[in-house]
Image 1 (cartoon, rainbow, N blue to C red):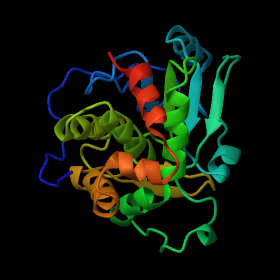
Image 2: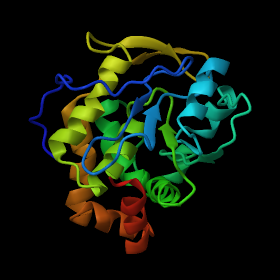
Image 3: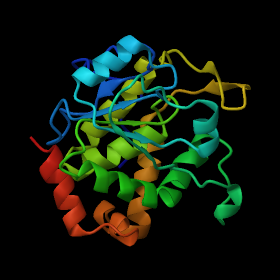
Image 4: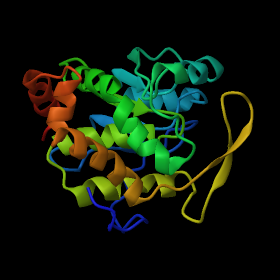
Length: 242
């Protein structure tokens, strides 16, 4: 992917769905061959309301893939409100800074290549689950549904034939979904500290894909290096495609 694409969301049909208590919830479909109504993306479900749970039930929710750290889960566990679905904890980032020999990212620019370097096992596990016959519909989320979720959904969309422009346009919708079109906004992290949520840009996602292609030539080769089989990728495409 390249870094010469627009940083603001173009005028596209809205994919956002109002799920009370959940930020940045939207349909990831309609991109490439990914059909609508089977894969959704969002921020965490820790403030999901009973009404929001009813709306998720109406969407046929079967799987929730949570990309957050254990510390985030412990501080802000997802609400269920008696929803009957499988929850998978597949952290994008290492559980401990000592678990990687790479410098821990200090900012967004460093985060995206770092995610590409460390997220392989999480991505493969997510792909395998999404390819299972009983997985759909599914929600993939992190804290606000922007960075970790952005990369995971972009990988799935790429595997389903979406163009770089389509993937980037969908990725950038998080700026609108999180009120970041005009700049950074504060949020409370898992320790209770106030931090700053920053807008995303096309070049951030492009840097993750550049890391993957520079070292593995292709996205499938990268996933194969983390244990994915051709059968896993074929099952994903068969389960999610139009």
